[in-house]
Image (tube, rainbow, N blue to C red; front, side):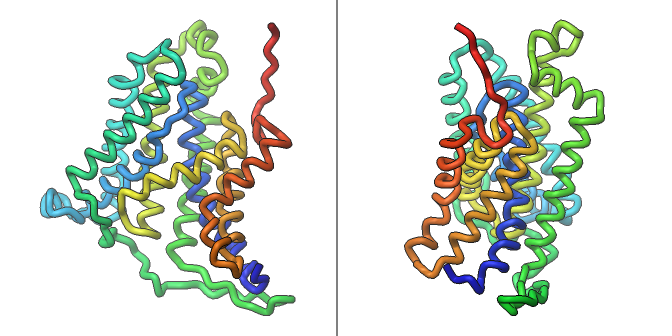
Length: 311
């Protein structure tokens, strides 16, 4: 371990973890509302980034028609993602109500391939480096770090900005769930579908709304990722990092998803600080090693609920 890099990597890892936590919230939302583990969530993130890039004039197809600034292209992409989320719930998942869990999982896997194929046809397979961003790679913030390491922490302004946006989006999401009538209805539906329906809550409407909100979260997460890395089909693989974050915190816990996302970002960054090339390349599997250790001690995750079934 290169100890001189530890302060730098700790701060960088936490900042990266903010976006992972936001994306993990979308997974938890869908699971809590409909008990569906959405393997297409990463592709919704990718789709949201591509839609924003398209509305911002990045594509020759429609570029001259829209060519919106980022602050306008993002809401347009969010609106489109809401429609996509509603369509997925209504046309793909609602007909699967009552079917085995494995069938629904396979449906989401098929949906992921469908989204990737559609994006490839519409926008091509080459990465897009012209994503609009107010920051350049040379825009950095230097933070003095006095003490044993006597070093300076150097952070990209884009990384700080994405963390702030992810934090604000997460706070807005939690406040919506805690204090709005619709949020309370979604929480009731997540606890028990039958009881919620018995008190007059339209469960099917809540399912559709959950997928719409998941589309919003995915788009915001996609925009944040694209700001750092550009737009490409590989963005969908972010779900491979979000999954261990969700399982680490607990499948039904929003707080767990946040903590899990921050933990995954931190662990990846610390592994990257290793002096050994073979270990540095293992940053992608580090979250799963952490997940394995936690689940051995606490199988339901850090904030998961213990379920007792009587036979």
